[in-house]
Image (cartoon, rainbow, N blue to C red; front, side, top):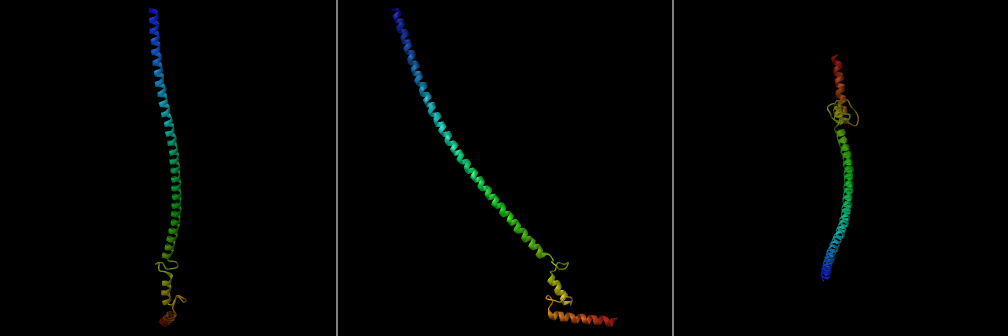
Length: 149
């Protein structure tokens, strides 16, 4: 009976070990299933994050391209405005310059009017009556200088 008792005890130990192994195996399988589900969720989250990152990158590239177009448009407008300003400044300098005038910067018309009054210029700048008076004065002066000699 001792052998039988020992055999039954060994059998009970083997059954307990088998039950423990099955329980542990079930727990490990549940843990693996939970980790597998978590890994699948992480993979899906990573895919969504990659898609969002790609969309954000495309939006940034579109924004950069738009800003570059805006900058080039502004630069061309700026260059055109600088050319226009340079033209206006050139016109202003030309208008202020004594084009044919005297050293004092008087315009040529004023100088010619004075010369016309003195009888030195004839033409469209001089008025006919002033030309006649200037000629008469010049004749009187020349006659006066001849008498003094």
